[in-house]
Figure 1 (cartoon, rainbow, N blue to C red):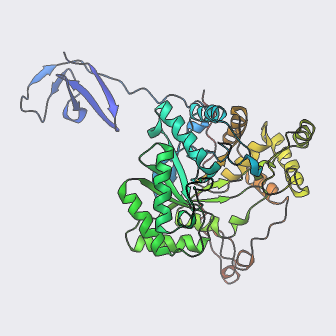
Figure 2 (tube, rainbow, N blue to C red; figure 1 turned 60 degrees about the vertical axis):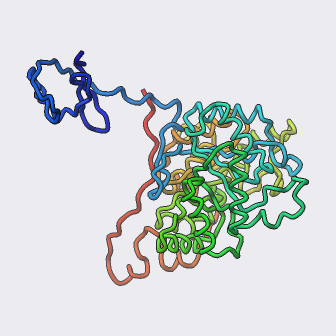
Figure 3 (cartoon, rainbow, N blue to C red; figure 1 turned 90 degrees about the horizontal axis):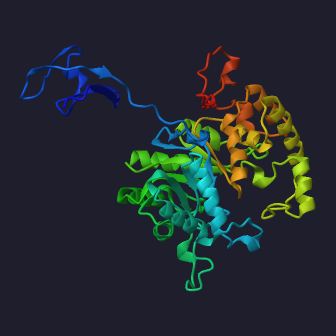
Length: 433
């Protein structure tokens, strides 16, 4: 039977003719259709009614509006990554938040059901429990290949393992530490590959050559798809990628660093380097380790005894943090946002293209409050207002030469220039109707 319909596939029109899919370029759209390219060429009268494939279903939230990871990495990820450092309870004695398996699964389910696919972990998070939780959850749901899982190595994953008497070969960026860590991560994650494999921290002595040669071998093995690096000097990353390009190795395509409205150090060197080199940024501590909160929220935590994270200092906000939170409340009122945390996340998203804040939290409600950031549009005036709340010195070069992407300040004293502006970040998509 001849199917009277045609459809779109890979931007080409096709029609069914004698139970065969034929590009419509081979057929004349009329009551008389001439087959071309087939040995049994003959004419037949058929009726052709054109229709198009159904459009994609609306995303449940804007987490499901995916973005290319970086210019060098075409894989598409959610605009907000889910941080999983608190999944497990091995670090509770250190003052870190703890999550049992049931709570962790609920948060992972909420993120995935909202359209999220970008999950960030590390070999040492909760002494390995974070990776184990993700692996068990993804296997139970049967969704491993629907996820972009990023993990890291540098720190020892063996702490707490009584069978390991010496830990020195399980840490650092050397080739053996890299191989041992990846193999252990694959087992804990219950997978045969990781999507993004990060160097967690530069160890100050592993050479560019050893690092990039060894990482490239992992990519060739198929156990790693993309490479990232975290918490390392901008010059080292630039040097590593230059070596990789010159020697046919796999370069870093994403950099991970701390950044927030109260912590902007990466604007001096790392952010300009990433923009120039086409490297994406995943950002941790975008909510200043939970210190982005209103006065009312802080008082509630004090009265209830809930308090907050105290790993790197007091759980209560500093005076500078309070001043910034007050400013975020002003902006939230102007843009109609319900949560100042969402404004803080939106601020990071507006700083450059290919930026992916890592959001945490312990409940689906906190997750949804953070997703509100994807609905917020900040103007240049909003960004300038937030930037001006606390003093921040970008350093000598920014003052003397000018900032990356701007007009050449020194040369501008002697001539006039029209400079090419930098690419703008993606703006929030309109709400689905």
